[in-house]
Image 1: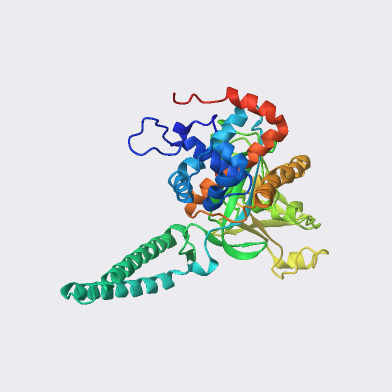
Image 2: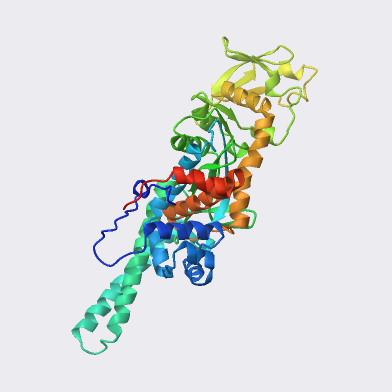
Length: 446
């Protein structure tokens, strides 16, 4: 913690602070990171540890903040906590533990602090909003009636409390309704609008998709982000580019599994001169190519046509306006029906048809790069799956405690930092790590 720049995090260290003294932000940060490192994340459990666990007592110097103070510190500094991993990765760069040459990206589902039953469609919220507005009008009328008469003054408090709850619920519903055009989702969770209903090993739950970018050198996490998208398809370029911001340079190789196999998305990284190693769905399923698959048809770029293995020409037929995919087909179905391979190559009476992706050349290039890089893809699983196992099993982080993108982002950053610290201890040893971190310390206030 002494190596962190709290000013860059956005946490003020002011020993001349006017008013009641507060707990040292550095001590509170130590408490959170140390607690998360041992699977103690609840503010009440952290409070209990500071009373009887000697390691926590020593770490806090005898300070015993209550659970409300701990929860408020974590809530107030959510955006600052999201930056902790960034600085941790910066320290790893200084120590030469992160090379940044090859990056592996992967995602896993982590349950949100929200129930799946709280996810509803737009129609439900619109109907609920009408009911709430009606109830607020009733409460206001009752409040006016009570105000006119001295009788029943005791019930005014109950009316006021119910009115506040109704207005609070109305605000949540209005916020949820705003999310439909922004996210395009069919359902939004009222408890945590940023999460989504996702399918995992334990079934369908309100969850986040936790994305990690891991360095190949020692398997340290460079970047982490919890997103509300169920699929990994649109995440590859975003995660790699954010990792580049942390590294301060571009990697040479970016690798992911078939969940990221979207040619348009991978093209964003490929055009930067980075080698992309991501298998197509066909390659991931180990589906072999038949003798009449598209790869055995020769494309003539000059004449914009294909030639089948038998030498017959498939001319341009048209383009799908929605997908921009180009269609090619034999000029006369009788040619295919008279071919000795009819029934194997195609069974259509109109003849064989070929669909060409708008980025077909890039698609073929990416498939070839994957085939030529089996050792890199083999290392991917060892590197990128390791942090998820440690976070979910050793740290018992099967669900987030905080809500919203900022909240889960703060927890993701803390969990990734805890993993990196354990890896640094394993790589360097505790004594060597302490000595090296001392050289990275940021000057603190006198």
